[in-house]
Image: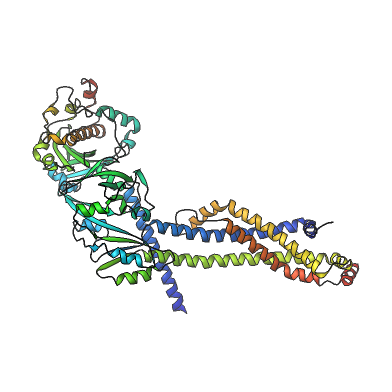
Length: 231
Length: 396
C-alpha cells in the first residue's frame, strides 16, 4: 500500500517536474528572445584584440537613446545625422553596446557597432576609435551583398582610418552628397553598381560616430555640427 | 381562484428569513457548481487551444536529420537527411492524422556573417497547409506568400530584425545568388520561428535542387486520437525519426484528469449540502403546518395535492437559488479566473471559466432534480397526515 502511494506521489512529482521544466523553458526562451537586438561583437575577446592591437582588456557598457535622453536625444541625433531613424528596427529603444578598451589600467579607445539596413540584408559596421573619436579601424561584421568581398576588403576599410565626426558633418546621408570640404570625399565606392550598400556604409559610420559622441565623448563634436556650415 | 403555485409562493413568504437563507444556501452551492463545471470546461478548452496553437504535435524527420535550427547551426549547416515527398501519402491515410505539412530546411554558409562566416537557414513550407496549421503565427507586417512558386520570404521577428528587413525589401540567398522579396514579418512568438526565414517549399526545392525531397513533415493529430498509437505506426516507417510533444500533452492531460476528479468531488459535496439544507427547511415548514395541512385534507384535498404543494415549494426554492447562483457565477467568473490562476502551477492562456447556455440549463436541470429529490421526504410526510389527528394535535 505504502509502495503504491509512494509510486503515485513519485509519478505526480515527475509530472510536475516535466510541466515546470516545460514552462521554464518556454519562459526562458521568451525572455531571451524579447531582448531587442543590438549590435555586439560576435567574439569580443578576439575582436577587441584584433581591432586594438596591444590592448589588454575591455569593459562593456550598454546604453539606449530611450534611457539616456529619450525623445529629445533622439531628435538631436536625427538632426545631427540629417535623417530620421527609419523602419521598424531603427528605434529609440535599441540597446547599443559600447566597448571601452584598456591597456593595463589606461583607457586607450572605444569600439562601437551599429546596425544599418543594406540592399539585401542587415549591415553591421564597427568602428575602433581613439579617445579623440578618430577612426582607428573600420570593420564590417556582417554584410549581405553580391559584392560583399570587395566591401570587406581591407582597402575599403582603410579609407576610413583617421576620419572623425567633423569630416562626416558635411556628408548628407539622404542624398549621398558632400556639402563642404571633407575627407569623406576621398572614400571611393569599390563597386559602383552597389551604390546602395556603399551609402548605407557611410550612413552607418556617421550614425556610429554621432552615438559615440553622445554616449562617450561628451558631445565633443557638437560644436562642429552647430558652427560648421550647413551642418 | 388561487392557483397551487400561488399558494406555495405565499407559504414560502410566511417565513421570509428562513426561505431567504435557504435560497442563499442553494445559490452558494449553485455558484460553486457552475464555477467548477465552468472551470472544467474552460481549462480543458483553453488547454486544447494552446496545444492546437503549437501547430503540429508530431514531427517526422529523416533518421539522423537535425530537426531544430539551433542543432543545424551547431552542425555547421551540414548533416541534413532527406525523405521522399511520397511519405506524405502514407501519413494522410492514418486515421489519427488530422493534417500534415511538408517542410524542407536548407542551410548555407555565408562568409560575410561575422569574422569567420555564419550559417543562414531557410525553411521551405507549404503555403497551403503550413499557415493553417500554425494559426498562432501573427504578422507584424504583410502576410503569407502570394503563390507557391513565388520567390518570396516571410521572416520571423528576430531574423527580420537582424537582417533589418521589412515588407517589400529584398533578401539574397548567398551562393545561389537568388533574390527573395520579403512579403511578411511575423510578430514575436518566443519560439525558434522568430529566427526562421520561411520560403515557399517548391522554391526551396528548386533553388537547392532538392525536388521531391523533404527534411521534415509536421503532423497534426486529431484531438481524440492517441498520439502513442500513431507514433508506434510511424516507428514502422523506414529511416525516419519521430519527434513528439505527446509526453508534454499527456502529462498535462493526466493532471487535468486528476483535477477533474477533485472538481466533481467538491461539486458533489456542494450538492449534498444544498440537498440537506432544502430538506431541513421544507421539513420544518411541514411540521409547523401540520394543522393547516389537516384542515386542507378535511376540506377535500387529496394526499397528491399536498405532495404537489410541498414539491412546488421545494422547486421554487431550488429554482430561485439556482438562478441566483448562476448569475453570481457569471458575474464573478473573471474574479474566479484570476484567483484560480494564482493557485494553479500552470494555467493555459484564454479564459479558464467557460459558462455557456448549455451549462446554465444543465445547472438549472440539476437544481430542479435536487428540488424534486429533496422534496420527496417532506412531501411524503405531509401527504400522510391524517386530518383529524393533525387538527387534534394542534388543539392539544
